[in-house]
Image (cartoon, rainbow, N blue to C red):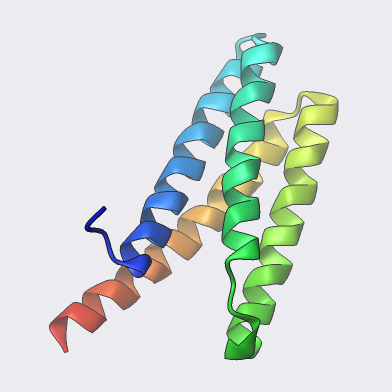
Length: 111
């Protein structure tokens, strides 16, 4: 309840990445139901990130929306085909976004 909106975004990235790593591991271990469930949870987080974008912020918001849509397509493919590789590609993208977001928060705190 005390987290700033910026910290909440970071927490959403953390949650999505955690669920995706769990989902990929489950898919690799033949636990397809568990893997798909974890991927769906991560997909819901990515959708929340997408719908919460302030599109009045211009190009950055537009690019993030494109990334989130791509991630959701990858996750749909992952669930359709039981593909941990599709999940891994989304983990990579979200991890990079998370690092950038964390860096921006650190810079904001230092200012």
